[in-house]
Structure formats: C-alpha cells, structure tokens
Image 1: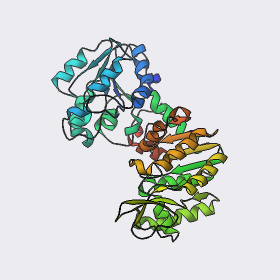
Image 2: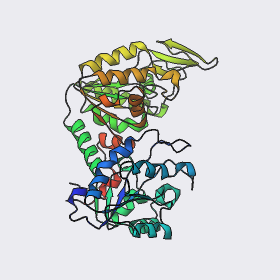
Image 3: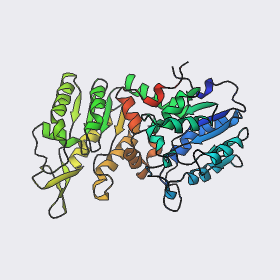
Length: 389
C-alpha cells in the first residue's frame, strides 16, 4: 500500500515538496478559465498548512519551449491567495539561488509556489542535476499530481527517489475511485469511448471487455472498427495498421458476451465542397466527424439501462462547434442517468462542463493519460517509486 501524506508524523516545521497538477487553462490576460485542478488540490494543501508544514509547491503548465510569460504559474499563485490569504508566496524561478532563498524564507504554515518546472528542459528529461536541486528544497516529498503520474519527469519521478515520499489526498481518491469502478463495478456497466486514436485505448479496451456489459464506441476511433466490420468509411480517420486489432477486440467481446455498439449514422463533411451532411452511408470524399441522431438514440438506450457508466473521449470532432452536438447530447444523457458516473479525459470533462452538467456527474477524474493507464490495469511510473507502508 502506498504511503499517504497522513502517514508522515510531526510535519510541523518540515519542508514538504508538494507536486501538484496546476496545468490549467489560462488566457493571455492571466485569467484562469477552469480552476478544477486547483480546487481538487486544496485538501492536501490545507492538510499540510494545518499541520504547520513549510509547503513548497512545484507544477508544470502547458508545453513551453523555455521561458514563456503566458505559461507562468503566477496566475495560479494569485488564485491560491483567495484560499490562503497572507500565507501564499510565489517565486519566479524553479531552482537556483533565488528559489533557494525563497524556500529558506518560508515559515511554518506558509506556502511557496515555484515557477513552471517545464521552463527548464531538464524537467522532462528527469535530469539528475535538476532532480538533485529540486529535491534539496524538501525534507519529504508528496505527489498529488495525478494527471502527470504516468510520466517519469524530475518533479514527479526523480525526486521521489531522493526523499521520503507519499501520495496526496487527491491521488489517494483517484486510485480508490478507479479501482472500485473497474474491479468492483455496478452492473449493468456501460463504458463509452471516443477520441481520435484506437491505439491509445487498445489495452484499455481489452481490459474493459472483461469488466463491462456494454461498450459504446464513437469518435474517430469508431471508424477503424467499422472498417473492420467491412463498412465503407469514406475519408474518415482510420488506423489501417490496427484494423486486425479491432477485429480481435470485436471477437473477444462476442466471446465474453459483451455488446459493442458502433455508430449507424454520421454527421459528415464533404471535403471537396465543405458541405455538411447527415448520412448513414459514408461514400468516398465524405469524412464522418460526429455521431448522428440514430446513433445518439442507440447510445441513450444503453445509457438508460446502466447502473454504472464510464466515459472517456469525445464522440466527434468536439473542438469544431459544427461537430459537437453528439458529444453534448451524450454528456446530458449521462448526467440524467441514475447510474454511478465516472468521466475522465480533457475533452470529456470540457463537454460536461460546457453543458453545465458537471455537478451531476458522480466523479470527474483529473487524469487523462494517467486514468487511462489505471483503467487498463497498468502501473503509473511516478507512483511505483512512492514509499510503501
């Protein structure tokens, strides 16, 4: 069993290096557009503050190539000041003399947020020199960044090997929720998968087939399965190298008496003219970019029967407003269900929030790639190096 922050005794006066996931959307005016990940980190931060620890937080934001003022964590620090007035500090350096001095000035029960770890390329390389300097800021390490737990970065993996380590309250909750959903599901269990790439979810699908009663497949990944069944998919996105894998999954599902439901109609783009059609047939030149009304009805019928629903991935080209209706309709159907509902993945979370139904979902997972790995029964590198009880 992984050690949690509660297993550290006598935190008073100790420097706790806390890795959070503050990779939140921020506009160019410094406004945070969605503070979900910040809010979900609050229980662990509060726990440390209440135990008079010296809290030194590190996080990444975005994918910068060196310093980028639009990806600074300063807006996050300002946002945290609302929750911890007079306790919050910010350092515009991640490591180095200025960061060291800022760490030394932290008092018991105070919080220091260091600048974006990815401003230094050594973060993603898990560089030993970067690890060593970052680890020198803490007496113990707490990882509460579930969204990056699948990465071997300096601030998620390297420092855990240098310091006494534990997980935070958010990661503890994520692990528990996902474990119960997969290993002790409520039946009928309906799993819904979308997104563009089949390859990202192959292992997950093989694992879910052993757990779920019904699997609904939409988004770009559906066209590889439709091609595997012999359907014409026109110019729709497809992973030709994975068609045989899709056939194997379909056979495996049949052998396990698991129902897989694929789209029967589409909202398609006629690529030469830019015209949009609703169609049950995808001819050459047509690319399916959203599920149609008949498919929505089929999916809703299965959702209505469910006692547990897992959803990961949009059911169309969600980022284009012309092709988001299918995803939105399914999001609302899930929210109306009396089932236990678990939603994960950035676009799926955006969908339920955009529809205003996020408060009606039983659990919103903060991890994209991390939650997929756990759902697939795989380990997470950054958690495998955490101390055990």
